[in-house]
Image 1: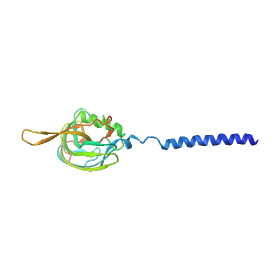
Image 2: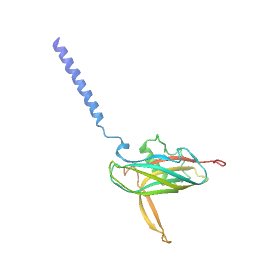
Image 3: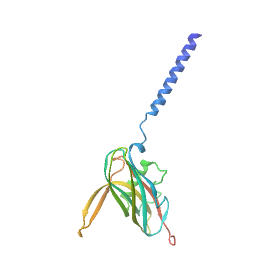
Image 4: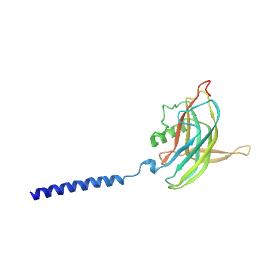
Amino acid sequence: MGTIRSRWSHRALGLALVAGAVLVAGCFDKPKIEDRWTRLDIEGATVATGQAMPVGSDSIAVNMAITYRRIVTGFAVCELRACSTLTTADVSLSPASDRVLMANDVDLVLANSVSMGRATRAVTGWDHLIQRIDFGFNGTVPQGTSGLFLVCYLAQGDKIERGDGTDTLIVTPFPSVPNELLPVGIELAVAGPGSH
């Protein structure tokens, strides 16, 4: 009888040790992508997801934070984009969106839209640095566009001198997934006639 109890005790102890090892291993799993990739977050803005924007020029302010996970040098860009082929049904840019899917959708928006106003800031960051940036710019909301988006992303920038002696900045967005970046965006709408 003592031998049977001893076997059951050893078996129960063995199962408990295996279960404990599984739990401990679970605690040391690799962190989520959101915690491993450099991410941009909108902490405050004068526009909100789904907001209907009146046609014409409008002032936009955005408070953004960048949490770096590696050394990044380039430009932070906050931009109003208009698209005639994509609608808000084609992409998922909302606070509840999966961040990797959102990164792909921001890339899709950037590839299929035109800038309607932007602000840029030269940045250099390193792992664990959190940098907060306040952007302000005038955006022009066009009539008859099917998709309107506010996006914040990181890019390479090249300053070009114009013929009149002034400079302009040409930005080329960094592809998100290959560079382990999580840009952010929100979907907007164009207000109908008579809306204010």
